[in-house]
Image (cartoon, rainbow, N blue to C red; front, side):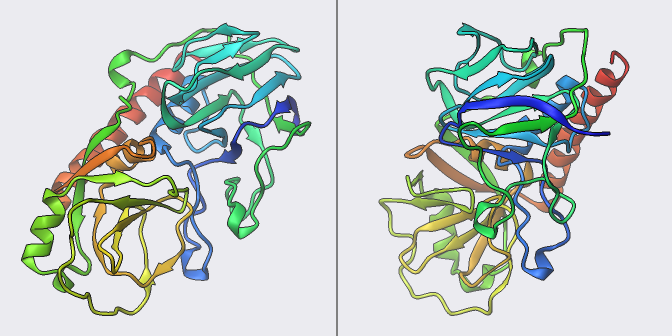
Length: 315
């Protein structure tokens, strides 16, 4: 099926890109995973418009674009709240929205979070690199939207208007407590350092990005020099400790290998919360077991699967 024009870009916003759940299985070749920063919000948007959960969406970073519909569309906006509007009239988030040809989608005042998602029924079209449409600018895989670009897709008309129940809508906060699985370099950190790490309040630095969130603290985490390690594969949420005691939490566009010791990794279900934490937001960590992290992951998957099944039966 041939793609058709679905949006014309009037203003591109700060950085609007196409993202899905990332390119899996290529890290061993040096190719980053990339994908949506807030994968939970992106999947909820796709479910609302009746797409597969991994369908590509537009990811909007901090300042939203202005887009004009080139045909009739059904969309949903999830994630960060940038006050979305259709023809300058505010529209609800986590709800399907009908756009007619010529309608303008724009965004106003920043309310909360960093990344919003525009899901379009039928999906957003783009070149696929290594079985993913996700944009990774640093690796040269796609680019952000520019003024006067045309966004392609395979629009499907959805008649029913659907809104997500508030209990399924994630809360965006400026203060977080995140679960951490310790390791793999636990032996390189003394018990004193590990205790201090979990007692310390960090802030997100403004130079954080899609590769990693840089964290700093007024407390001194390290009182001794850490040994050098061989570079090894790095996971989403891995927490690298730098020689000055600051930390980096590795995010969607992370490199495939790294050489800083990792004290742990943020559990998967807490990554979306972290992705929406604005600069100077505060966070603390607490230890979790692999069993606890897996239980929370299964619970989240059950929620998404149930919503997807329900949506399928009313499409």
